[in-house]
Length: 127
Image (cartoon, rainbow, N blue to C red):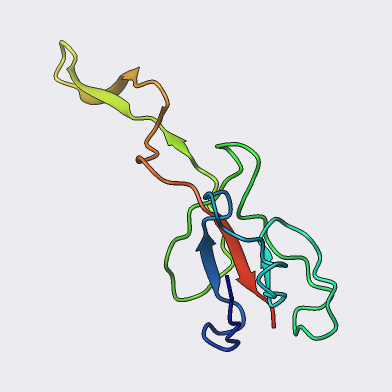
């Protein structure tokens, strides 16, 4: 199989989902793709990269609590960490002398709402 490398298709800094574990996928090194690295929190050590010496975020993680979904925004780099939430249930109370108030009487259990997904290895173009 002949793999032709074309640099410059994606801009430096782009994160791409890569099917690293799919049967038949060659490694980045085998493909001659030294401009991409896995986004796993390491320090970039490549003098040809504008990110040389920079610690990149860990988007891959090691468990469901450390793995990251990518989310669009006008700026990059914000990490959100709330994977679960709960709700308070309030009841309207009326006292015998006409005083009314709301009181939290119950709480829901903490829930996780991670949708069905297909895992990929995030890679970053560094040069």
